[in-house]
Image (tube, rainbow over all chains, first blue to last red; front, side, top):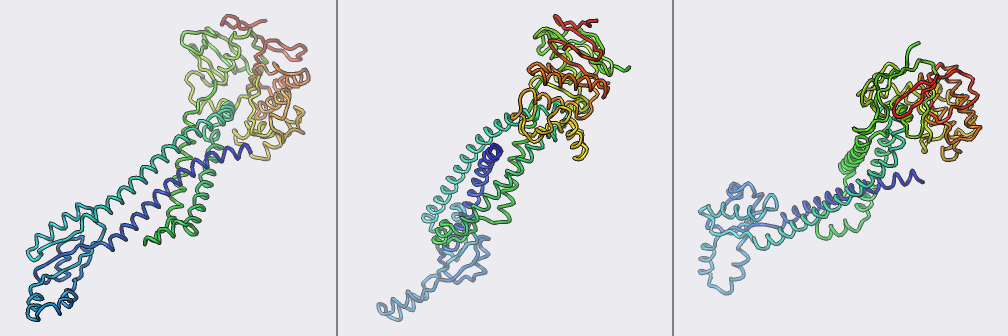
Length: 270
Length: 223
């Protein structure tokens, strides 16, 4: 029971660290997926005085992924009954060309402004509409969400650090007697602290396994994936290879650092 | 005979302006059985601590088993301690370990394999009449039994030097006699040097011994 208590307190602390990191990673992934989703929906409208080919348009900025021409036929069709055919033909000839530009990534407000300037430098382009106000609102909302998650993760990390520090002091107290006795019989430092390292490694593996299981269940059966799918985001919240390895490395690093601190801080009783 | 301990003008203290042992010069030959007596707070235990490197000489020189104790490195100290068996008044047993594993501790540290250390531990537990308690934990034993375990542990690795700090201070008559018999046996059979810090020298010892008395920081041999 006592041994179980020794384990559980460190496992909980490690699990909290890993969970906060994993939540941050999952949110980051969701935001990246949402950015990609926004990118597909977002486009810049260009009004030109003459026909421009997709190659010409793409050459104007590396941010432009593809372009498509907006047909004016529908508008002219609507005006057919209201205007004389001669006037309609004149209108067709004088009507500017409209293009929709899709971008390679979701741009920042300054990138939109730069793109707009660059496009307007072309003599054939009369007007550029970047829908910057709508874009700005969405973009700022996304940044705010990112910041909130970051602050939340930092707060969790700070609280967990305090928890680990407390745990460290407890370990120091629990293991100091055994380490002192072993030192009195000439045990080298590695042998004195072998139990601590074994405990730390086992706890790191257990904490990582619990995290993997928890996120696997959330990812596959959870409400969260469904919520994300509803807003058009398909994202893997937990990647078994990458995330499990990263979590194990973090858990081992934290627990070994904790053990090393105890061993180095430990002073032999006189 | 070689000297196991050589002290020259040895001064010991815990703080800068304090003196517990002052300029002591003495030597202890290999195989000797030595008692160190003195009043409470006279520095007996401090002197014993200096023999296993828990306190460094403030002044003078101290050599234990051929190793200079002044500014000794931790690796050298570890090496020296593997040849010393220590018995404390408060036993200092590892409470998370069984009696068997506690006795095995010096053998584990010295790198003995399971079979060798297992048979040695069984033999020693037999000597201290605790074979039947091998699987128990220290807190399940009486004070006398715990001290017998500590005695067995001190002898497990056949040390050249055995240091005992008030080994029978809290014990009943039976446990005390077991401890003294083992210490005598260590001296006569293992040819180990035995140094015992005590308030009273027990009566009825069958072996010759040396007696040092500490008073006001000075060490005098009582002949």
